[in-house]
Length: 487
Image 1 (cartoon, helix red, strand yellow):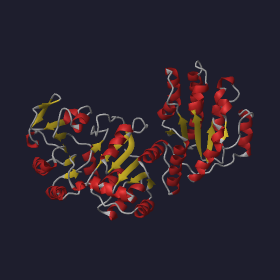
Image 2 (cartoon, one colour; image 1 turned 135 degrees about the vertical axis):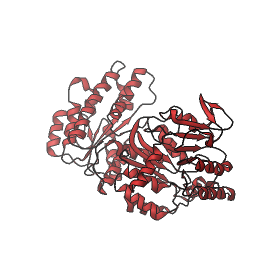
Image 3 (cartoon, one colour; image 1 turned 45 degrees about the vertical axis):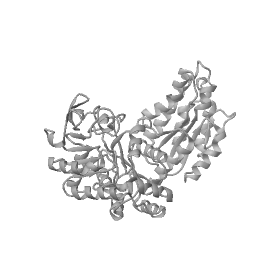
Image 4 (cartoon, one colour; image 1 turned 90 degrees about the horizontal axis):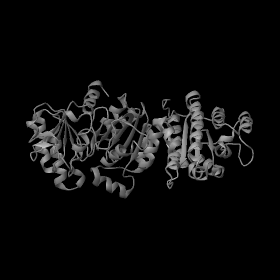
């Protein structure tokens, strides 16, 4: 993206002030979202029905606002939007986000005509995001989508044609240990479109990985160029909405976009170097992997578990995703025999080291040393720790559960830090939590491992299949020439 275009887009994400047209003290999401962020002192409410909203003066029209406006959010009846856009142009507003729906996505002649009218009025005079979208969430500037959005900054960029997808990232990012640089919902895209935001986030130094949800495109050649440009600079993980006949029908009614066939989109993503996923959960889980892990140099995976009965299943999961579970070297096997009790264990890959987990205070072995030994094996490119907490917490005595988990957590982290920080190998944790614990101390013990690993920015997942699938996405990206990055 050329310097002038980048600066224009960057100024949209970082406005000096914001006008909310159609503001309301109760039901307006934009009002409630922005009144609590760092931009709250630079907000101007516009609605002729109110003289004051939440303690701030409210103006009857945009022309009555006493200062120049960089960014306006419009949430009024669709039929009134064209006149308000004209007023914004006259005021000198730089960018408008049209929250309002009721345009081409309806499929109705009046909605389609209204959208064409908006495009004609605004072309070359003002930048528009939307209509029919949630707009921008940028923790650094204070722009928000929902009141619950965290103001903590991160390096995940989200580009979503759907408002609900952008909203979901805003809601669940904190619970998934994700923080964002920028999130944008762009809707019907009568002006600013997916390629604009792809090129911008590709050049944005605050964005390290891009999550993309797209339903269709008005300019396939430009989209391909932008996808290639962005994926050449950083990971782009995409989900294409509307691949089935029914999904395509819903997409047309959602944002008015033509969607194309699954084969076309699959080929497009492959040619551009984009990682394609197939549902929202997979999109989030893959973004977690890219956000919190270095890339593996190969597909050879070492597995350490406290549940030997699932070793075959775990190995099959890896094979299904293009990962392999190789035999440890003879040197590694010899060292493990000295660390892991022989009875009831399987000293191989996957490594079933359950006695160490259950007898952690009896000093029969050192769990941290076991992790380090597996990680250092020359046949291993990445490490997966699969810990079945569901049985573990329940089997511990009431007075030991918290203490056991504290020691296990410390040792697992010591070994994992060695693997990632010293050896540079990815470490993924699959921790199956117990959702039915009633005792408060048990509940605290239940979350301890997950919280500790997330605080140190390790990828953490609730199940083995999700963990392996997410790790495999990193390997696919690495084989496509992805740049090595540290978490």
